[in-house]
Amino acid sequence: EAGVTQFPSHSVIEKGQTVTLRCDPISGHDNLYWYRRVMGKEIKFLLHFVKESKQDESGMPNNRFLAERTGGTYSTLKVQPAELEDSGVYFCASSQPYHYEQYFGPGTRLTVT
Amino acid sequence: AQSVTQPDIHITVSEGASLELRCNYSYGATPYLFWYVQSPGQGLQLLLKYFSGDTLVQGIKGFEAEFKRSQSSFNLRKPSVHWSDAAEYFCAVGSRSGGYNKLIFGAGTRLAVHP
Figure (cartoon, rainbow over the protein chains, first blue to last red):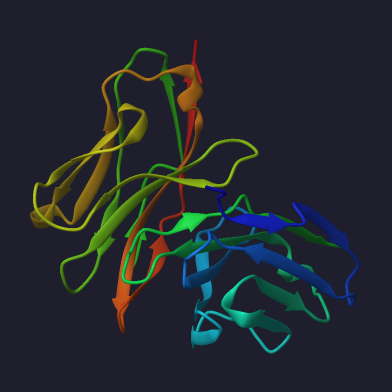
């Protein structure tokens, strides 16, 4: 069984540009989460999807971040326009319905210059 | 508010030595607790979890953790460390709300292993 995959593994963009991160959860996992770790700080929750619906987006930093989950399958996280403080590692995780274990992808390292 | 504290940012041990990584949490109800490990270039891997029942839980790679409610702790232990255990370790508490689980992480403990 394939794990959670994320693309790209690393992205370097200039301030003001747009970047889209993609996450493919484990097949059958209705729950999909995005987290972010900024420069050696804690990994922080961004948002949670149940299938295609946003269940909780309380961790999204501001309206420059837009997350979607098309058809309840893969998810994208767009940052537009990117700022320097957006640099960090973005993790995606998924879990089965009514299960609390989350399985993480390898992360996307975003560098904004 | 829920929080997780990992007091040790960096720990160095010799290969074969025992290991204990500390984790303290703040949570109003019975917590769901997790330890994850991130090896260099890898994603977060679930080592073990505690939901209820036996307070000593076994995980993968020879790790175990003990839940102590009176101390609000969930320390990770391994009796004999291998060089491949060098990684960053994260303790997390599940903030359960509406039937799902939002993880709150500690800052992580980076483990170095001397040969």
